[in-house]
Image (tube, rainbow, N blue to C red; front, side, top):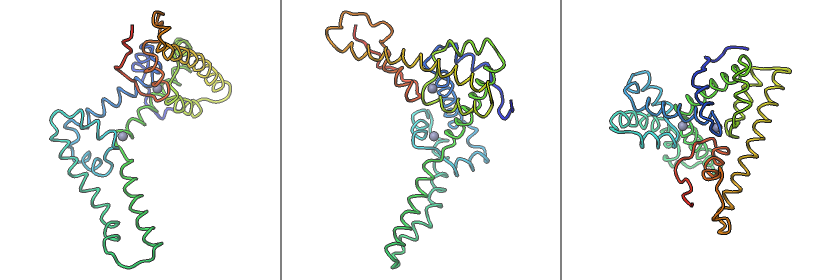
Length: 250
Ligand SMILES: [Zn+2]
Ligand SMILES: [Zn+2]
């Protein structure tokens, strides 16, 4: 197995120990938290980091998280200021082309407007937190495939787990395709698919009962494991851990 990624075992075992609907959701959320804290800390003020923040910035979702998490927004204000200047510098040539008002053909105007749109959309998509999370998640997926291959007790833990969400599953399968081959890949895919199907069916039944509990005729019947079925089903689909709004009906 090619070792392109650093192997991480402790966080992987810890995430599987939590018996959630997807261990990669737990790892993903923890990584995001770490990066948000990092970008609000002092290291962001280092010159090489400033250069990267100016150039890449953050996506709208991560700007919102930084804003919400910032206690004292001093460093956020400084990096936002220089990032804004960088965005404006990049936009200048497209804006000048449009502002000049020089007579051009309709086709040319459309082209200029489209280039400006392309620039703005491209800049909005780029995000230092998303980039780092993508890399970290690939590393975790690498470690899961590696541990499954090398450690029997881990392979058993995976088979007994609640599987993965549909958001994180493709990345894990892609890593398996990259790292395994032949019968090993077939066995990994078979085990993940079997565990996934079993747990998705369990999840679907739990969610069905959750929806049926809205019927007054089911008021007195026990919830079973369905009290938080909606938030777990959302996690299975979207790859995020949903908290709060636990059903308080008796
Ligand atoms: Zn997940
Ligand atoms: Zn982002």
